[in-house]
Image (tube, rainbow, N blue to C red):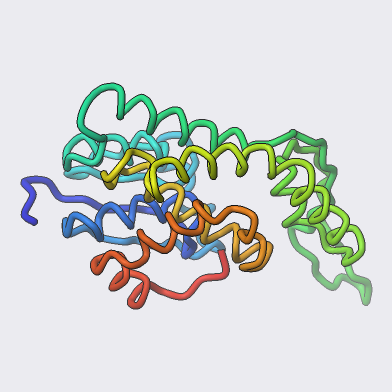
Length: 239
């Protein structure tokens, strides 16, 4: 599909918060530049981004932040919002609720970060910063390095935090036979397919056994020829 604009999607070499945008580009066939910034070079790019965060989509050289704002723009432009305003609202409702799940219960997390170390006078001198940040339960789980604590956090997520949301999503999508909007592929389907892929990567494929409609949605999206082709040729990443 041709387009009068030029697009450059800027993100890390990861699926993360940009993958559903890549799905949209793949599905529509619109050409774009998929720029992936190595994490070690991020400090050099950070100040040039609108809100010092990624992803960013440059449209004719003009940067736009926020992954779902970008996705909604593309969805409106390429008829992926559903057939009317009601469909568009349902897409927003489910995507924003999925965002609530990703955000989850915020927890305080203290950290020590070594900025650099060097040898002086036969001794190692270290520059260390101490910080305190707030992260979601899911991020907290991913950052946990202690195997026993990590397993405990995993069990809490799979048995307490996540089921409330996924059960409701599964019921809605089950009624629509694997679609968010009945018989219509929308940008929200891409958001969920990308998120569910990451969910399986974090917790294993059996984690979706209780949610057959969600699994059906992911499989349906991944079987679309343009998406299937993208899954084959995209760079391999761990997240």
